[in-house]
Length: 569
Image (cartoon, rainbow, N blue to C red; front, side, top):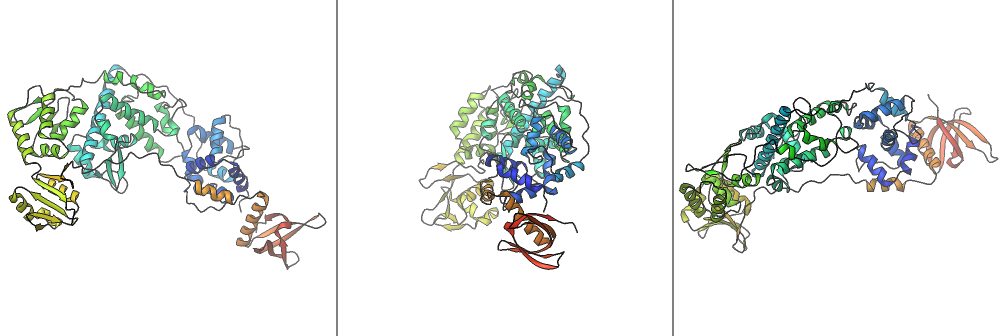
């Protein structure tokens, strides 16, 4: 039994429930851990494996303070000491438990770091940083639009596969930056993982339709707020970038992580290529609200009009306003991404817009409002023809049988669907001029849409429904473990007599190890007597053991034992 666990156990018992929850969370304790009492908790927190997980979480200042205190020196920083006490690495009296001293002694000495203030970026460096931020915002928008149409499959490690990255590269997203872009979007709550796929969240659509300055502001602020505490400043911003590499000196994964964070800051335009700081990054570094005005002043002006061509293409003479770009890309496929982007209308793209809830009238009204050249006749014809065909195939649920029904006013379409080999998995059967299947309505609808049939969803009352293939998922909140049950269990075993409880644990451990104990027994006359016992059993409030001096078996009431010490063999 480790005697140094008792002071920590008493410290844990005296802590409030809120402080215990914070401690367990910081130390990575599972809520379902099988601890019986605070002595179990203290011993577990002082185990080498637990300390090996706790020490990498320390910041540079905290690690230095712990190293000094483990060497017997005083810590001059009260905040660092309180943090170490909160993490159960230092006792309230300032003593460092021996297991912590041993764990710290295995760590390298921490060399001093020379901190440098951030230099202000020059005009050219700032311009390049602004351009990069604009490119990053646009790339994340492309990523979200692609994920809305088809969520990305993830590898077992949680990263995008090479195939998914190639498809994004075809959309103009730089392959080498994809992982960083996904991280930035995830930090902002725009994407989340569900069923091992990367989905957009319920706030992604509003972000996509906001202006470039608002998009950047949200990304930059959320990036800042999610930075690890080792690189956060007291004001809520971040420390100089030159200090980031040493912010968590005992974390072996930190060099790679800090390099990734610096690259993400570079992609967001918060740091220039030469390491200097653009003017728009200063408020964020100081912990204030971002002000994108100086950034957007360096970006090309957004436009809200396009040129519609007779060849069914559209040209934007500059960066198209995000809300217009998002809507235009529901009805046309973007062919090139630049300051002057090109879009192309096809039967498939127009049909996709109709599936999303547009109508012939709404599309014509939208295009007339944004076109500088009117709507060419070929485009009007394409929209009218596609809208006329849309809805020829109706997919509904039969209220009597519960089966999915496919109907059409064009019997030739029904016949074509019935013999279409790509639809064989639906197991369609003919029924009074229609087709039925046991497969769900939505699955049938999207199978027909993928096969390029003009399908539409119909509700039980005959109303046309808007098809939504991949609904956004709810923005995940900050996950926090619930330690209520664990703390209640520990409290329930918290007796009024800590000395007696600790003695019981020492005796139980000695019996399990068949250890030799030096036992101090209180006699009836008030005196004490020391015995050397080989512990053999404990039960009924009595300790059994062989007296090593007299070579006899003795049974002692535990209530008479004043102290018990294990004798090294």
